[in-house]
Amino acid sequence: MLPRIMTPEDILSHSARVLTQSQREDYFRKGFLSAEGLIPRPWVNRLIDLSNEFLDTSRGLTESNEGFDIGPKHTAQSPHVRRLRALVDRHPDFWRFAAESPLADIAADLVGPDVKFHSSKLNYKWPGAGEIVKWHQDTAAWPHTNYSLVTLGVYLDDTPAERGPLSCLPRSHQGPIFVHRDDAGIWTGAVRDEDMAGFDINDVEDLTGDTGAVVALHCRVLHASRANLTERVRPCALFVYAAADAFAWMPQPTPTSHTGEIVRGAPAKVAHLDPTPCPVPPNWAEQGYGSIFTAQKAAAEAM
Picture (cartoon, rainbow, N blue to C red):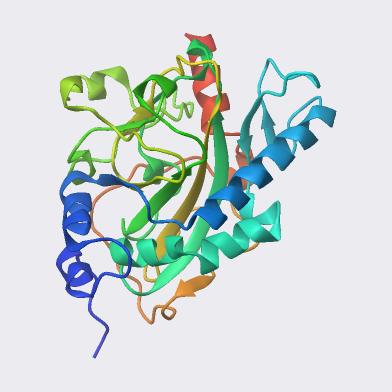
């Protein structure tokens, strides 16, 4: 007999490891959640220290490389790093956090007991209007055979509404997966305005939180982030996990040396195939992938 496909009901039937049952139900209902106090403070402090160390290292760079996505205002005196790429390959402690901390147990609470690691990054939202991220869905860039993938973010500083937290549209994960290209077929990393017109932006929820708060995003949920209106950068470490039975069907944009490793449970013996259509993204192995920041910025400049 083949293993059962893990529906939300099946996942919820397994005992919670870290989250409450109510939090898990909210996640499946809305497509996201925000929770405090889940990550031990020593782990949070270590992530903060590593973030600061890499920002200091970036002072010696003049352009982006495999580890750093450098912003246009970057100088040695005033670093402007938009993203630390492939986080688990930058320092062993990032991988230890992804695999050994309660974060992987939170992933199991949301995708089922068999979990594999997908990717990671550390995003920095600097003050100013130039740091806006438009509405998008993660799975559009890295489609899988099913949609049991979750991005878990850890805020590395207090993130109230004025600092541009992640913002989500409730229940949008239950709708279609939109095209993230312009009329010429160029990848923009953003949902078209005409598609967003069907949503009530008044429904948007900001995922605010104190230092160490965890935010969870379903791979299909529509999310964005506004400008950071404060004087301090907003850092958020992001780790993506997949159900073991979710398999990529296109080259991944941001693979790491640990992508595909099982971090909880066991490997899948059968692929779960979800029939929901997903537009085909670019072939990242041929085209290369910068970041959502570069894609959205290029699209705005081309208008």
